[in-house]
Length: 579
Image (tube, rainbow, N blue to C red):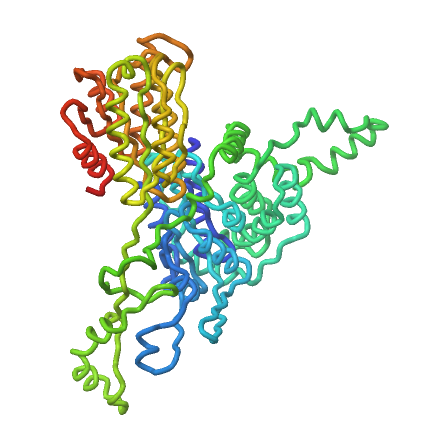
């Protein structure tokens, strides 16, 4: 059997375990969207009893929809606060399928962790409190690319970790179970008791694999019980413990177990041959924990150590925690731009006038159909609710990158300074921040960090000297780094690069050919960021070099001999999406 077929066989077992007892057999499924994942989800739906709820959890769900909150329509109709159940309470006794779980917000992750730990949720709204059961299982679909991963706190609470990325369509086999097997297993589950030797074997295996979490052996014990009833047995046998070790412990391994040679070197020599023969007869196949460890070790990926090293290095290089759940929310402050139909949530601003206007035409019909004695009360439905929309202007930063090298300084630097000063004045009127980077000689220098001070910007520009080489690649890399830092603060950066495009100094000191090739590479990397760029060709006679560079960085190309300050400003605004 191929590796993909073996993984798929375990995946089918995991689907059956979830169908039998969802809260005890939650799954972390790492797989991209495709036929393999779709077939596994179809299998799960087929095995799950019809009476068991199975809901979908979007990554951008609000806290009110997840936990529950005020039902505004029912509250207005009843004249008193009415609480509605959330998605966690609706999924009690069943499961949730979390799509793109690696992008869930930290708030959603925290609420899920509480529900998985306690089996209940608590809601407190406007002096009202409600505690609802939420004993459920979670199927977290991890579609992360590169260093994107599901939150470690949430992954630690999910029992079975599956990776279907190496499973091909040819590895997919027919289902090993059907709904009748699940029903029979559910009936047997209360009768199963886990023996002490099985608990010892799973705990010892977890320690040997370097698993620090205490939840892992506890989850493995639960999975072993479910695996037993899946075989129609009430006693947990060795194969059931081995199955739990493969599905729960092996994916969590942080190190490989010690080899037999290392262990034998630490053990003392036997006293006599009689004692050795007696031990061999007593434990012919070895203790249970050794056999369970072998089963878990066989399921560990071959590149475990390499993968763990790469993941540790990625944690230090990247701040992916912010990517796991910083959802874009609609602005709650700014200039009102009308109302929209929507669900009222905490923090949203209810547009009472528009809500009443939407509900008013339907009052006679609603009073007749509702047959309520409270004829004077306004009847508001959920579809009548209108939420005020706001438009919030995000801060903008224009980064001027000025070529002060000899090729530009001899004839054009004064004209370039004049055009930049006019653009600085327009940025000041719009209250935009500006930054200034100059490049000459062997590198680029940040003369002015992002600021709104027009005086500082003009002073830095006036003191800009000219002459030397053209380190164009160093300037593009410096502008990209500054623009990404501005973008990380929630502002919108725009780069205005003023150069003749004649690079002749590479970052390692190389000549013209190396410098031109390096500048094109830097330009293509800048294009990948999606940051708006305007390239102003400051050459007296525009040539193809600057135009070629603009094409590589997907920038708007403007030739200075045919453009005044007004046209330059229009080009900058158009490229930044504000014109």
